[in-house]
Amino acid sequence: MSAATRSRTPDRQCAEAVDLARAAAEEAAAPGVVGEHVSLVAEGDRVVTHFFECTELAYRGWRWAVTVARASRAKVVTLDETVLLPGPDALLAPEWVPWSERLRPGDLGPGDLLPTEAEDLRLEPGFTGEDAPPPNSVVAESVPSHDLAERVEAEDAELTDRRPVDATVGNGRGAIAALAEELGMRRARVLSRYGLHIAADRWEESHGAKTPMAQAAPAACVTCGFLVPMAGSLRQAFGVCANEFSPADGHVVSLTYGCGGHSEAAVMPKPPTPAPPVFDSMGTDEFLLHPVRDGGSVSPEPDGTEDLGHS
Image 1 (tube, rainbow, N blue to C red):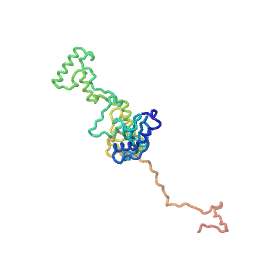
Image 2 (image 1 turned 90 degrees about the vertical axis):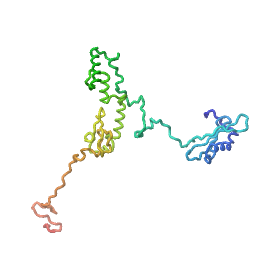
Image 3 (image 1 turned 90 degrees about the horizontal axis):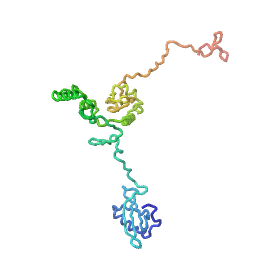
Image 4 (image 1 turned 30 degrees about the vertical axis):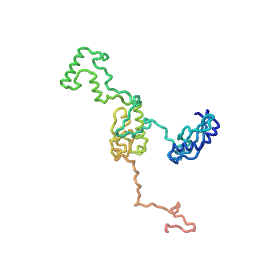
């Protein structure tokens, strides 16, 4: 019932029925978990809810709510319902999140199945050969009668002689399907452009140029001999690390990533080191204590004596 329809003044007899409400709460709860009477709220005319503190440790902040009521012109208060409700500061469980949003990389274990939605934006329809019409159907290309006869004879010869498919004549659905299967194209769905982009962003974030390992590496993976190139358009930016001592072994790495296990780390050119200073210990430099006059004699001392260079 909304707050607008509640009575402002609770019914006196219902408000005084605290003992009745406590007895109902203790009957519904475990022994010793019903605490003090906290408050009461008028739910309507002659309908009052009493709140009692819940002392159970698992329900911190919760309250036992017991609703009592009294019929019109009746003097006896009766019990309506008893329920455990969270209070303003109650400890609540986190909001429920669907499993598809809770799933994180690494959560999938052995035996687990992860269904993919039919409208998954990461995938788009591939080629399976099922959409190609049979050679003799009305929607297929018109084939001259003599060519059709040659194809039939070729198919009969293939069944009897067990010749390879490429020896038969024509490009029927079977030949196209066999070629597509050999090239790895017979998949119901393949990665869409959006799927490629989010995968590239994820790999760049985990093994890209901005990681601390790449910042301290001597060189990038693009020049490393342990890099295994990828197929398709992703080979322009990513590869697979094949260095067992690298932290990225077996992972998809960006070409701008790097680590200390670079194949050329031992032969990397070092920065030039300046030559050590050379000291001349064979010769001596003349050093005078006083300046020499123009005539070549030594200047006299302030007391009138001449300094002859002897100590």
